[in-house]
Image (cartoon, helix red, strand yellow):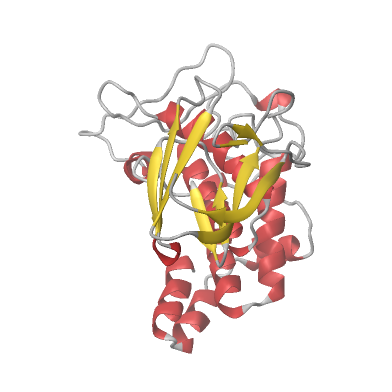
Length: 288
């Protein structure tokens, strides 16, 4: 349904939208439209792509029930079915909501599920820039995605389990081709996706990652230096073609409590932003 909805967006041809709805799994989708959590016993990486497609249908048509279902699904997966890593599922399946303590050992936390949840997260933030999406992106990227690759040879993990006495299931990239090998290749090419977002006179900085970016509409270049998560500071440098007023929104994750501080050119900025919100700096920015 995602591919067909995208094809409708590219062509404007209603038949592709109609065809995408032939793949709506109503036994799974309709309870979500009623805000009912029926995920227990469902296969995780079958469920998430279905709802990514429903989210795309909502994007292109504005059908409210699709938007309700997609956002509710994301909320319950993240808040009621996910581990601290940002992953979910045991033996690839969802269990009862808010009952994770009995489901931590064994084959938990499939990588494809996280890959697809992050695709959904970035799309949802683009529609509604809520801090909860930025926080999940950070949680899943740093705790699961970066932990799913072998730094020695680039092998990726089917599972990044969280329980006791478990091992990372690294795949033989030349001899096996599971779903998590395929998404693993793509997942580690997407580390830069989700750091910055822009719309109008707003620039959001969602992740503190060494990076460079061009904001062409504003005539601005950005360079971020940071040692996070080993270190605890980040520096963002702006170069602009000419001075420009805009709001720079810096994420303050919920875990960033006492000691969090924002400075502009070395001078502390007074902010009322609480942990789990954006620090918004509205001013005319210029090079230096």
